[in-house]
Figure 1 (spheres, helix red, strand yellow):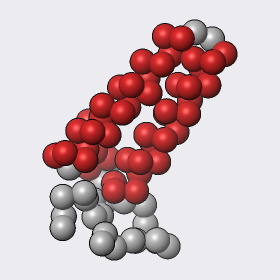
Figure 2: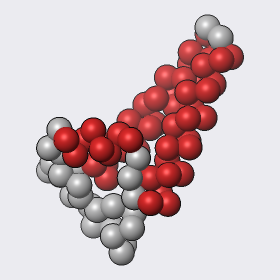
Figure 3: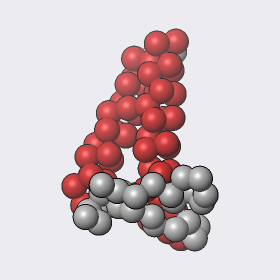
Figure 4: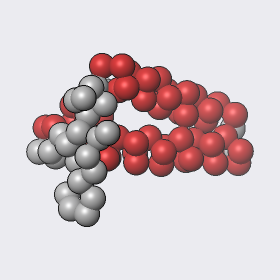
Length: 78
């Protein structure tokens, strides 16, 4: 089982699903209100989540590491 760092600092392992969920909801709302083309956003986010779960990183994690956010527990740290 992955240890939780809550309460405390925000880690990459916690921020990736948070950002993904936020953008999936945003893309869905935009698709329902503006254009169906916005469904590409949740599709791309889903592909990034698959990448993150398979190899333990995605483009967002590279930016977060550069920003100095601690890694925390990754999916492959078992």
